[in-house]
Image (cartoon, rainbow, N blue to C red; front, side):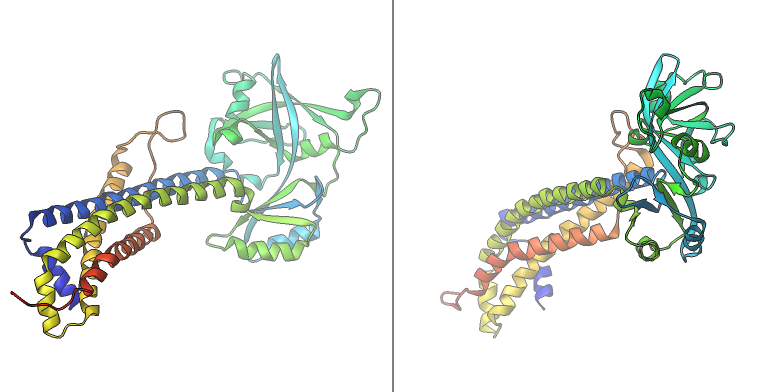
Length: 406
């Protein structure tokens, strides 16, 4: 019954035009606040999906590293057990070390990442080549795939095919003698291609054959820096992570893709919730219009309330009527705002209405509308409406029965 009264009060023409104006402003304000929340959260989702997509091209589903040492031991038995785990699709063994690269007078420091043949399957690096081909070579004839920033620093943009790169690596476990050069390994590697994913990777990594890096560092055959694991489709990373951790023991660390980039994703989540809090304040400000509209409506409908009470209506029913009226105003504004936001997001995806200035991997603001965000926004609108409507509805319920002079 309270919904019926609230709907009739919403549709009916008020004797005081200000009530209509304030009610309209309330609906518009709630619509704008709702639309802003949905759009901004969708933009954050778009950037989050974009960043995750970029990082997933370089970081594996799961990564195994030693807890306290620089290198870890993985023998053939352990490797076979890992491959047999339910959920593991493939595993790639890698060796990483800081390297100094030189091409004539051009020089650059990088992280040299030696990978095996399974790396192309585990990592999506091959999908981001901008020059050349994916070729890491072999022990006798190694090849080098450079990040675009490293390639530019070495001046290989035009003469990659004829300009080999000299790599300098410190040998592991070799003491620095009177001749420091004895502790440094040198190898000449032909560049085969370049990739562009994200600046953090493009300016840092160079990829080559794992056997060459092992030989330069004087490591044993079962010594590695890390193992990168590709999971079967739709497998839960947490579940496989627990299985791997139980198999390998406390000397090894098994991290999901999120945990490998914990600081980045944590900052993104903090930023998203901070913006959500700020925009929620817009709804709170809009709620002052709602308080005003309901207060005016209470004054407008005093006679109706007196009649209802004379007919036996309890104060609780009067309060519910005006609470429902407040929620109804907010709900209509929320529906309108959500539809407006969905229309904007659709147009942004289709026609790139708002461009993204500066150097970035895309030239427009990405959007990704998630149903959970819409539910969150509607829940916020509902709570703000209830809080705003409480005082006017409580005041209406406390009106004393008095029909004198009516």
